[in-house]
Amino acid sequence: MKKLSIHQIELLTFFYNGGIVEFCTSVSPKLGDYHFPTEKPIKFSKTVFFSLVRIGLLKENKEEMAFGIRWSNFSISEKGIKLHNELEGRNESD
Image 1 (tube, rainbow, N blue to C red):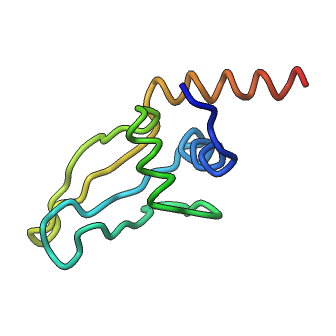
Image 2: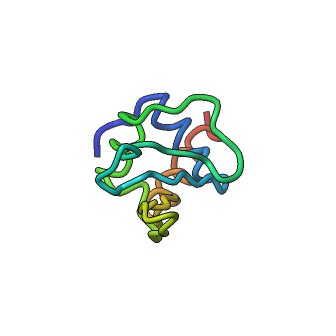
């Protein structure tokens, strides 16, 4: 796996600490909109988010419908948890 950027690591840490994001996945004027049901990360970039999804560090958990609009919930995957723990282990030994 390629080395993660600082922005990817920061976002992965947000999800590791229980963060969740909901993305609109319905073809509608809301397509691509997102919101955070609880806390929001300091920085958020769709590009960074989708790079973590693409390499399997974040996963889609479930879909919910609200007023006919589909929202997909994303959180950290097992692969993401494992990588985050490895990164923290490296930082502690430095």
